[in-house]
Amino acid sequence: MLADVVLLIHAAVVVFNVGGLIAIWLGGLLDIGALRWVRHRGFRITHLGALGFVSLEALLGLTCPLTLLEDWLRVDPLSATAPQGFIARWIQHWLYWDLPLWVFVIAYVAWFLLSVWTWWLVPPTSQPTKPAKSPSRSC
Image 1 (spheres, rainbow, N blue to C red):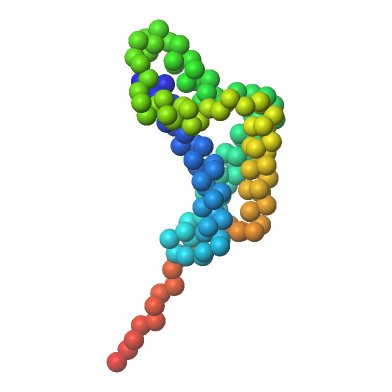
Image 2: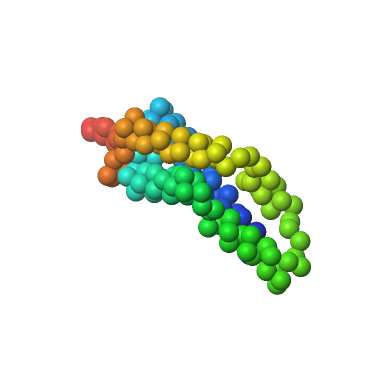
């Protein structure tokens, strides 16, 4: 059960890392009020930091702490009796690919560098942008 929670958190981090950059591109391209949050400096620093962490892990050949924790929880005798659920099996299938390590290193570092480049293409702001007020009409 607890291993499945870690798996869901891990999947959320992946969605944040991949989806965050896509959202930044859409927000920069469309420049609509609903996507102005993608320019928020706090979001951008968090996103870039998460990608940098994953890239550094890959470059150093380290296993993600969330993967280690999930693996440890799955071999724990107390949790080994509970079978993995349907959704957890699909998330695990989606999250863990059987590819050589160098493929992941290239993908992570490329996505990180693309995010760094995006910092200048779609620059962050220190304050969230508020929509412009409509002009008031006076009698």
